[in-house]
Length: 175
Image 1 (tube, helix red, strand yellow):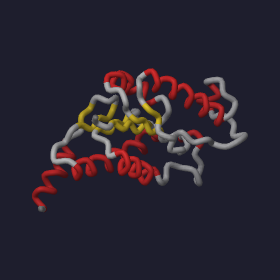
Image 2 (spheres, rainbow, N blue to C red):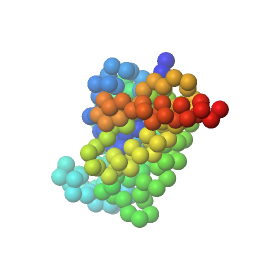
Image 3 (tube, helix red, strand yellow):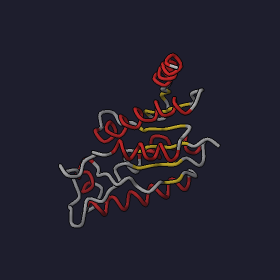
Image 4 (tube, rainbow, N blue to C red):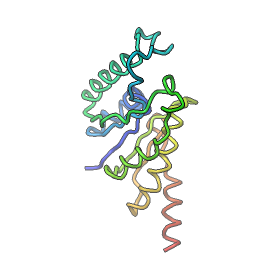
């Protein structure tokens, strides 16, 4: 059975962007990037206050519970959260630095046949998640297989095969 990894920038992104795809392809594994706790007593940011939360950790816990419930309905699995902070709560010592290493570790262990990355238009957390996910998955996939299956990105619709095919043809040419 093919392994599908969804690298989700935030808790709701896999379900909101790829919910139908997840429903039609049960058993996908979701790794959520911006899933860390900001820390005790950190006040909710503007977005979270507008949603009725008083602390950042309260908002994160509620979103994780909602996501787990939605993933159960879709027959998808949530990996242990990657623990990076949402942009609203990042500060110099807690950014998305190290994200490439974390995503690389998931790819090394799971060796997915498909990798979905929900993208948000101009959203920094989505852009910072997509770059290493696509950059690491495409070459790794090309190295592991002689035939390319699928890498989906955007709202799980845009097919990216050209970089993989280019990488694969370059490998064949070099020996």
